[in-house]
Length: 332
Image: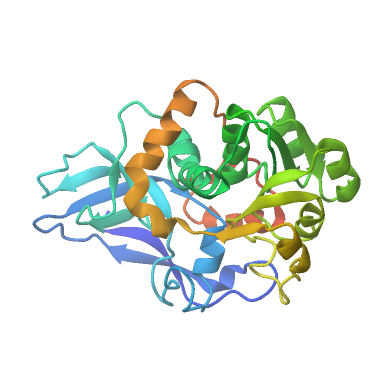
């Protein structure tokens, strides 16, 4: 084979579902691997909610948008198939930003080696963006204390499910918000959450009263939407809100209205938005913090695997509809 397949972003998404017409599947010639470079054959590609924001034209965001005509940005795991770099040998596995492509030419900058023997799906589900984001958000900003109550939206998602398990391991009362009875059952019966709210069918205020009789101390926001207003009504004085994602607004024509700020004043609520690029220098510390929980069996995960590079195009919409069950991964 003299070519490989990649997928470029050629237009910006509009409101509603992401259409296949904003992408272009292309064939590229095999690259020449120069001195200090490695060629990586990607085997597993991660699909994350943040990617929806990366496609927008917003130049004031925390990371520049993907350029039109450029390979769509994503992280993944791959195997070194050719190396002219002293720190990498053929056969080693690496992870990092590779994009929607079968092959990635790299100097090694931004890549991390994957420990031999670790399952690729587990690595992308736990030790990649989801686990690092959960660890930084909860411990870096949430200041969790045993006996407190935390509410996690998007609780069956890749980040929210880990946030809840970490909080449970720290002795908190953990309430998860999800979009189906199956997901609510999974986070309670499999992950050990203390309670769950189906935001599509439950009366959110009534359920919060039932599950958090002493109020809410921490809210970990992944989705946006009406749950915000209910949690603010139930949050305790000096509560903390960690804003990680707003998936319900990413492709909405009109962003949802946020809570009134009067309760924020009265209850002295701390609200912290964050993104992981600000904390990349902390990766060794975050991995060190997360690893003991994983080794002790306190962190479970599940993966939703799609097969073939081009499945990523329609797969992104699963993140918007909540149609995925677990970490969304494309196996190449």
